[in-house]
Length: 245
Image 1 (cartoon, helix red, strand yellow):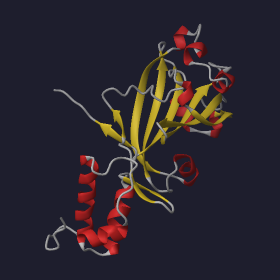
Image 2 (cartoon, rainbow, N blue to C red):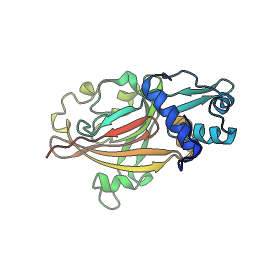
Image 3 (cartoon, rainbow, N blue to C red):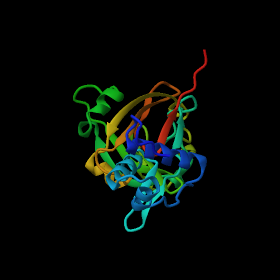
Image 4 (cartoon, rainbow, N blue to C red):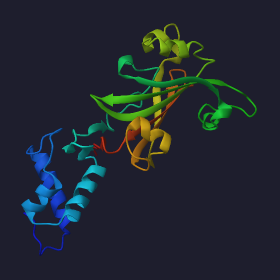
């Protein structure tokens, strides 16, 4: 119950009550929670107090709103287990599940369009290299959890654009190219905030926090064959760390 004499703010107490009901299964995923007025009457608190609790739970991914229908419980977050995360999860060259990719765009660019490619692929000054830039969304069921952009050098994979458009599996793309088979990754993790153009694809408001994982994928011969930037919805994903001594 709400303790009006506690040092804990009333909205925070209500948040904890709702979280407990979600975690206990009393409020199952995709079910509608009580209205603001219901909470006001149930706990004898003001509407601004309820509204702040609901707003923070929505921003944190516990709840979601449907216009004209009410507020509902979100599905559990997808887990990214760092011990098992290989860096190939969102790779074009090493991922056979082509049907789960929701392609947004495929285009040909050069390293001069994105200077980061010079550093990643160790491109010499004044050298121009063509890349396939492939942008796509990843889902967990019906939920969009990440926006991904893959950069693949076309001197190594001249047919990559047509291969991706035709949903060719990676083992066909790499057939006869043993030295170029993905074998190792180098990953970095940052916290960023959603920009306007990304918000429409991730179905969030601009400024919402994202996990950005950048993966440099190396071949068996040690050559960089792909660079992937994946932006995960922080309200839909969680990172799990497991270490042993």
